[in-house]
Length: 407
Image (cartoon, rainbow, N blue to C red; front, side, top):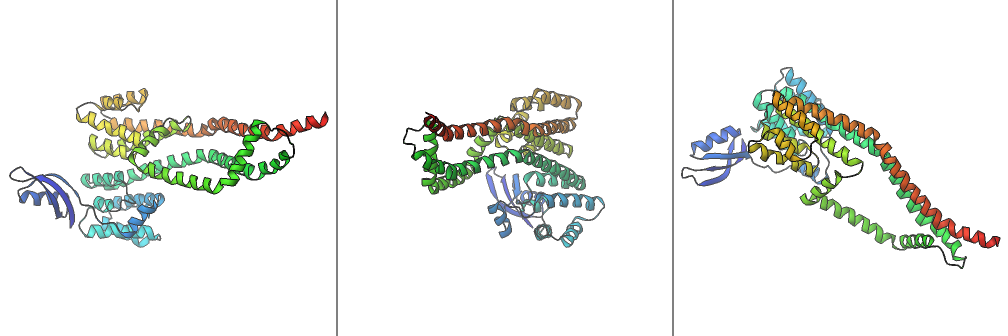
């Protein structure tokens, strides 16, 4: 039996709340009605996490990675489509799996099902693996009887998510390498090159140029204070991570990312592509508009855009159309708004949202292909500035020394 938290009103219309056991939320509602309580809200009670789940949350590492979850979704679709009962399908996958993390996940799901939980409730207990969108879509599949199709849609959705991440990582590989090389070069110059020239400059017995004095001072500060500098960098990284975990810090950081010169467009379009594809999937699966918009917002890995999409819920609740709500969100282009209008007029909003997601995806692919070309001039300018500073600081005194020797 599962435990549920409830809020309701008794026969005197007084507010009551508590916890009740039942095989499902509907069974819990019937039990409350038998007690004379009108239920207002019923939700699954939180459970104590296992040590494995707690460790995964603390370390940020999933017990089951994305590849395994992709494979699991596809296999469940195939087995359920073939008419294999859910329990037998999970047992078969557990027996055939060679990965201990996946076997433990399937074992937990089977245990929860034996205790009377639905599959969506069992997955919700493993929040380290299944996010809110995945669990909600499975709940929809259980309600509509289309669980096999839901698993296929989830598999396609996660493949799209993985594709976006891989494309972004591939586009950023070259800039990361160049920036890393620049950092290493600066460390080598300050630790090895400048000190060697400092001994030469000390014998000139003349006033050094400003740029040279800056280089010598920077190098001396690095050599004298490097433990403090390393500690300061570590402290800044640790403090920044803590700040980004707060709601305010993450909101400000995600809002700032959208205004980056080159990467901002990619971040915005990639997030909106995921949101539109997720919303199309939810609507096509039979989810009502309001919960579907909320689910789509959870898929967006950007707090600012997530809040903007969630703000559409209030507009829709007031009776406004999806077009007006999308326009008020202020995050969609005019072309996208026109496509939303067409989708509402034709009654095929889910198809239009899928098309919008594909449009954003194609734009992201183009931006990612040209990102290296857009970033390359910036990197060249930075490298040129570094070489210019080094040349002016190191070779100007030698040039003066050469002219003095000629005279």
